[in-house]
View 1 (cartoon, rainbow, N blue to C red):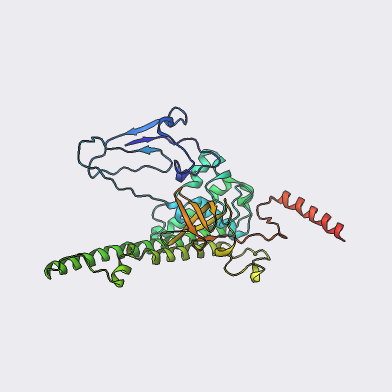
View 2: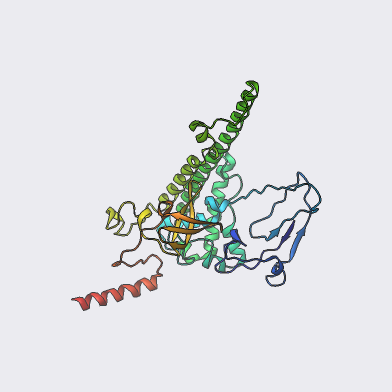
Length: 364
């Protein structure tokens, strides 16, 4: 296994998905062209565990091709997927306080918070901002409560380093409330995952018991696949648990936007149908959530061909030929007579309002 130092983070690259899709990190160019010097070269033996931090390019190969087949198991500690980093916490707090993120421009639900202006921050600030929340925060103990206070103070400190003016508009209590709410979400997600893995263990025991029964009864031939067994063997009913995960994460998002006034075209239904998220026309580049194994994950539409769609998920993986019902728009489309001002700076918004006033005077 070879591990190299990270390459330079560019404006558009995703630190947690380096080397995937269009982010090319060819092995031959890692050191010569990208400046990724070799950090570690080692041979792993049975039972060894190697931790590789996010964004560190690495390659693996079998040391001796003449030996028995080699296999390894990879675990991804993707805390950013579950909102458990300071960048996500900052974003939720700004939304809760109704403060527009003029520093990083992360104002829409579909905005990828790991690209753009966030990548152009000074390295020490960016590293702190992208850092995972402290281990132990999700523990339902006195230590977890103590870490909650530290986390709230830390995210406020980091946010002031990112942009003092923006962070100063957020009351200290909002930072504390948001840290507590993110902790609640994290504890919910941890419990859901625990239930899912416990169900997997129990399923394994059921299968072993069934095999014993078949052996004892001297049953030969293929196992009979009943509807009940088919339902039970469908990846440990993962969809059920991922529905719970989606509900928990949506509740977190809704909480963060509780004090924000929705645009007029959303309140009361407007001109959009209730099922607009699954029926409105899609275009290449649209940010959506797409079905992957029964659960919906953040993605971008990469191709539209008739009534079929290709998407690229947040981690670089791709899926082709999805139906419209498998893709959900995350933000209501703007109607022709409306302008989305959420991304405008105060100066841009002021200029736009003056332009509208001039247009209205001409109409009169």
